[in-house]
Image (cartoon, rainbow, N blue to C red; front, side, top):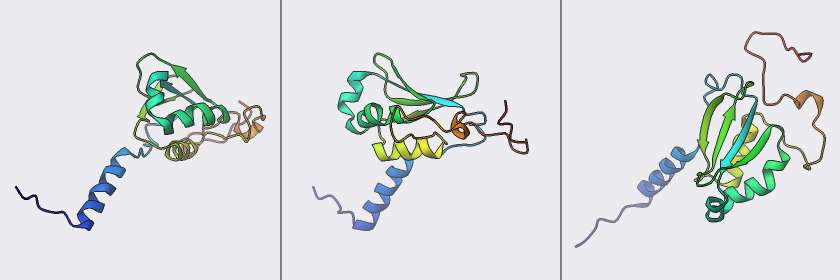
Length: 141
């Protein structure tokens, strides 16, 4: 049996399509009131996902308003939460690289410290929360 050989451009197109389906794009309308997040995962799952494990163990301690929650048997997910800890969105992390996860968390507005014990500047204490469209900035609240 002879299988047809795919030329390089269709293979590149297929690879690009696969990459596009694993990259999360925030729906900012749905994320109104984003205030904090947590990564939920199981330690056993992390052992097979080196990139996610590196993010969890080395990068989470650097982010303000981002924490880790161990759940037995859970696949790694970034859970985005509102001001009252209501769940806004769940983002699977298994297929993402450490760099992609860091880029996403920063795009969402989370403040990254240079060291885990570094103080958070006052203007980022409520990060990633943003004032609603058209409302005055109320830093005094």
